[in-house]
Image 1 (cartoon, chains in turn cyan, purple):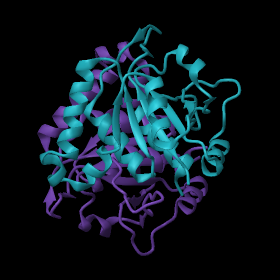
Image 2: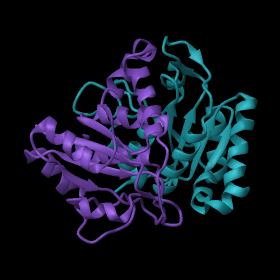
Image 3: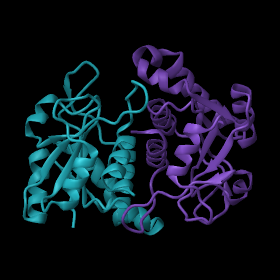
Image 4: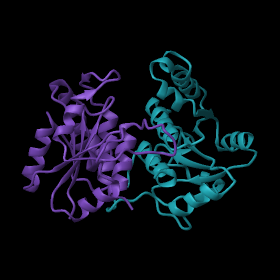
Length: 185
Length: 185
């Protein structure tokens, strides 16, 4: 029985110039990540932001599709959006998973850059399938997770590469590919 | 040398009740599909709609990011969006690829439903790598490609499945996973 979670960080992330910023939660990220997560049996999708107005905005969307008019209009959307939770920071992600599973999760950072000691998809897939421990794969918005966050991570996942040098996938595409590689087929 | 293209159909597609409708082109589909396509070395991304106002809207976005202010602001976005072309229907997709490559493409439909004689990812990957013929993988918006379109297809690709029965990926996620399975790694 594998316990896989994902988290999408909106703060602290980098902007184009490498500065620390908070990005906005988008409606489509909620839907796309929730639907990909539901398809691949992910246990929960954490949207990470300490900004109260952003949490309020996201909560309205989640309630609309999981309990409101949207839930009756589109039940498959409801099943997906029910997986989404809102938290202030990565520590709150760990605490929530700890409460749910009785164990602290191993945090896995994602990045488009090659890093030393990155874990491969095959290795992480194997770990998730055989380990009793929950794992949470952490994605960044903007220009990616702020470098300070890497100190809190247990693993860094190897980047997704195509045949060339271009590697600027949207976070919606990256989440889909990572889940397919870790769980799909 | 493999020649892979993708197409996103906005008409004719099905709505929730199985009726034929035209959907709207969205800004985010343009960016996400273009970025996934560029990452995996896809040669062109066709947005299919016969609705002039929709083509006008999409052209404005493409020009902004490939030639306008956006191209200077974000050169990696430019490289991706340059792959996007606007056409009226699937025949125009075939004609355009024929002009570019000297051969008519083989059209590959995608669907979330299991269909008889579906081609597997492994088989199609092999074909693309070894064949001289161009291939175009065709995705639907809304509730999927209208059934009439399947008569024009050379292959139907097997659906993407997770461990359970839920299979309601966003088209942005589906395109990313299909390209990764056909080209990635």
